[in-house]
Image (cartoon, rainbow, N blue to C red; front, top):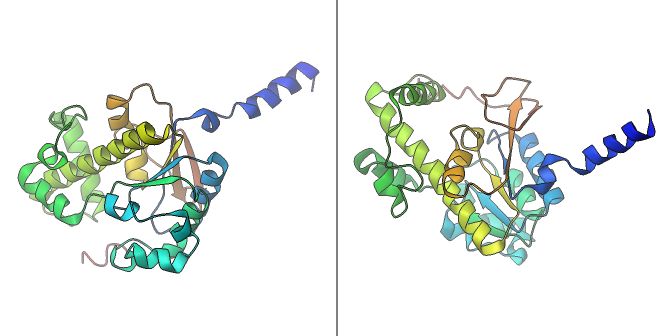
Length: 256
């Protein structure tokens, strides 16, 4: 390799795209331990000033301190994680521990708020600023149909057709709430911000980054998607990596 090519190679390594981002979105399959280990590794490398979790409400996030992070059992109890419905806390705790001084933000939409969307719509449930995030504008017919098909497949084709528009609205609300939390985290800490969320919310094309781009277009964003056993992910990621599939029962068994 010539000196010029060697220098170019070294510079390309120095300028890896993740390093200069304001926001790094780390997608996951929620119950895959390898995905969470990768998130923890990347958070440690990034040393973010803020961590935004899909899995926490703002009230839960406010309880998190470096001292609490140091005691995993106490933290699990303080967050009432056992009642949260999320996978085992032992998978998530290393992500907090990878940046214990980071300010933690919660962006979970509570169940009752999600239920309200079926009655009042995503914009009303979001509150002030809904228009800026695009929630007052209906999706095009084609995009609405695509999103409904995705929701139907994600729920094992078991949902009644009349429930699908509401499920799409809930997804839009969750994406917008995540984006709002990132905006607040950037304003209050200056970034960088790491976001821990499922692949569906992470995708750049119509997940949380699309809402963030509407209200904070100057932020630089890098999006990681994580899949299992090399299965393809939809478009919308800057990088996709794979891990072995987690052992789990048939996710469609409950619907049957």
